[in-house]
Image (cartoon, rainbow, N blue to C red; front, side, top):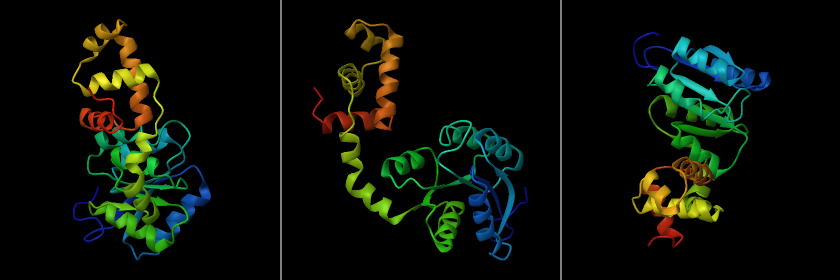
Length: 218
């Protein structure tokens, strides 16, 4: 890949990942109108192809549909960042849901923009991502600001998942939780994984804050 600052001394190299040809064509058309600022180096219609293209081309920017054949879009990002740590990711989706946006940003995406966006908004989201900033669709930003806490608090955990989460927040390790609940450690790991998937976060600090909010703390 060329040296220099992307978008300043050279074009921004872009991979467009979406399983709909018309969407890829639309994004390409928006980028190509910008007088050489962007250069589309590859397209991908599924997750394995996307990861392979990122490894090969090491682009500055990946525009990524949230739902793609062949795997999880967000689940594939760690492999992309290992292959190219400075990769900027802009999620382009129809899902106007603050929970998806929050998960995308936690997974390392820098921008989350809806497919209904006008070209100017798309370009703003892409440019911010490449420059190290973040872009979130305004309606989603407002929803996240007012409802992020409530969205996690309304998650329904099973009785055992709640107990495991409470013990995690109190500092217990998996073996200690297994001993307290008189179950196998692998069972604890299963409950823990299910709870984390439902909650959308995994750090002890976040789990502790959640437990305190819903009144599970000792």
